[in-house]
Amino acid sequence: MKVAIIGAGFSGHTAAMYIGSALGKDHDITVINMSDRFLYVPSLVWAGVGHFDVEKTRFSLKKVYKKFRVNFIHGKATEIYPDEQYVIAERRDANGGQVRVDYDYLVIATGPKLNFEATPGLGPEHGNTYSICTAGHTVQCRDKFLESVERMRLGERQKIVVGTGHPGATCQGAAFEYITNIHKSLLKRGVRDKADLLYLSNERAVGDFGVRGVHVKSGGKMLSSEQFMSAVFKEYDTSWEVQKGVKQVEKGKIFWEDYDSKEGETEYDFAMLIPQFTGMPMKYIGKDGEDVSEKVVNKSGFVIVDGIYGQPFETMSSNPDSWPAIYRNPTYQNIFAAGIAFAPPGPISVPHTNSNGLSITAAPPRTGMVSGVIGKVVAENIIDLVKHGRMTHSERMTEMAAACIASMGDSMWDGSAATIVVYPVVPDCRRYPNEEGRDLFVTDMEMGLAGAWMKRLIHTTFMHKLQGRIGWKLIPE
Image (cartoon, rainbow, N blue to C red; front, side, top):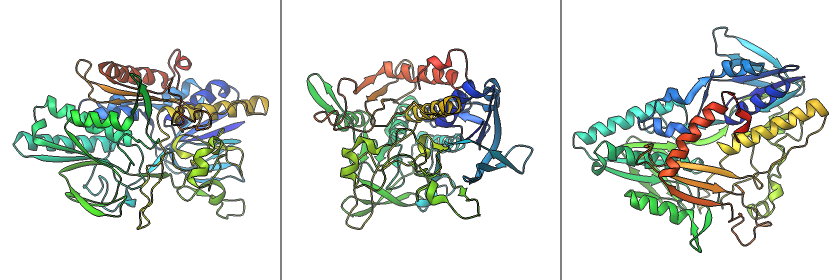
């Protein structure tokens, strides 16, 4: 059997390790990835303020895949022929040219396209805003941030804006982490009094994070993530503005529209804004040369899987079975998608469209732990199919737990972190009708120095696991 995996982020790399471990000796496993190194994205938040070396977040993929008898192609997948079952990739290594990869099973785990162009003037290519979504972007962001620090040391006041750069962006958690790390970094550098910090987001409320917020029981009372995050921002002397969709960026000005259709602008000196995520662009070509992309991906380029699509939000959110369980394409049932690459049936947070018709809605996050879990589910089902001809694993995001540790300073002595455990990721009001759709025995939020230690421990532990070192399977996704 031949298995091809496109993408080697959290989901694709996890799938490759499990499939390679189980099938690599007797079957042909191939990974195609645009970079020859794995990138541990969660730690880029430290690198983006100059407190962590970007190289500590990366390692060679070839060395890992050699252990698992997995072939590796450093290249970009450009065309998929689902009827004839092969992929065309453009090599990025010294060999160059195109390569054909045949498959019996295909995993699409590309991660997102960073769609900066959806917001005119957004992104480092224009020099207007910066990003911590890739290693290269993080280095640029760090250097620009340090320029602002130098200006503050010379007595200039700087306005720093961090948040989302599109009305439909996701990854608000990364933006929250980055602005709190900026606060801590400026304190250490002795220039915090020269900076005005603003968190600017498309969320319905601060702390929504694209998952409809989080509620926990604390001291016999209910505490919301909005209250939790608001308290952090107040303590850190950081302003916040939500319910705003960024529509355009110029040097020194961010233009937005809000829930009430009001248009406005925000001035800045340095800004890190997360772009919209879309699916990676690839051609899907049928046996007669026709475009079959509608059978594989939605309009945003995400792979259609076994979810229920096209429902009103109220219907979808009341039915946990709307979310996919096995992440398999219904037309081409030997194609699976994992992580950000799969198409969700809709948002997790309550959507909002203003009177001008602009949708300002936080997209559902599918990164980190969620990506790893889905990558493992897909891998286990492909292993089942190859060995036994049937699948035995499934896990919907309405059944899935996730833990997030939002760093608020990297120091092991005076740092901090917000530790959030959510179960399930997507609220299930059928199982937990009186608890905001989540199990309040499991769901929790804490903040303190212990979280900073845990964040660093997880970095070390996962860099160990993802390099396939001894005991890697014992470490959960």
